[in-house]
Image 1: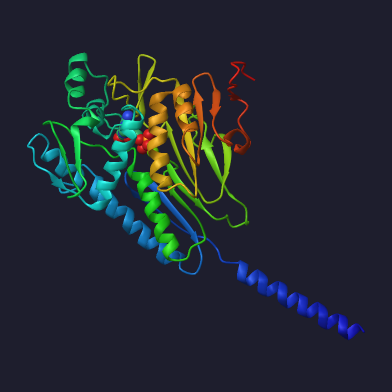
Image 2 (image 1 turned 90 degrees about the vertical axis):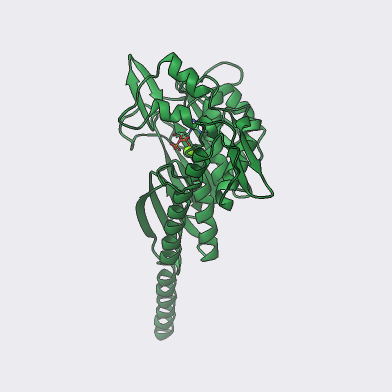
Length: 355
Ligand code: ADP
Ligand code: MG
């Protein structure tokens, strides 16, 4: 009897050890600066290292297409040929980003507009020559902005900017696009769990974390200097997430915060009332990374009220918008999904009463 029990215990112990052994695959992680941001890729699985290495190379490759400082990048070629009438043949990746960008420029009435580049350059926010431009400089730059002046030719995968001095800036879309591309590479390598993180700005949470739980994504508090201070925690599992905030790149002059999300219609940093916008796309949403990246910028420009209304019409998409009065505007299930919400914030209520 005793022998039987010992044997049974030994078998149980062996099974437990084996299980622990197979569950012990640890996360592989690599960080690098690409696309002007701190990229951290995490993956679990037999081919995690290979998947991460290929993904980093892919992001670098995308950077070479959209970087205005690379002389033969697609965006450089578009600027160089602006106003000449010449069509510029593009890499399929750049063409896709521009096509989707134009679609959302139309849908948001120009709140999202990749031709904002002359204004981005003029303000120089995030550079050492940031300044408030003169009204004359602003109106001169604004003449060179307008999504209707970017023409695309689907048959030849080419594009042209109709006016000299125009340019495109893919800073509000390329990181999200890259997230989707890495997601595809992970799938090809059979990676089921991992975290694709481009500067906390655009991310994809694949499967579960090392504890077998949904990934816990900390949303930064928009008014705390310490980036570790959170506004809330959002658990994610097979979802894409992007955040845009006025705290990412800005300078202050005369008590005003001038940040990097511009309203192409006024030429000024968007003063829509929003401080930050976080958007999540369900796994079924095609190009979820790119879409959330576009939408966070667009919704920031539209402001909390119009932005939330716009989001409610998007399938598989939910968002959280913070405004200057520390109100949290949410769509979809976001209000219940958010955990550990900072007491600095309160949920905005449709009735107008704020709790
Ligand atoms: P982040 O780069 O921090 O993720 P966003 O996704 O909001 O921020 O993108 C902001 C960037 O997009 C700016 O730095 C600029 O390059 C570009 N941009 C600024 N305003 C607009 C706009 N209205 N539409 C499209 N792109 C914009
Ligand atoms: Mg973004």
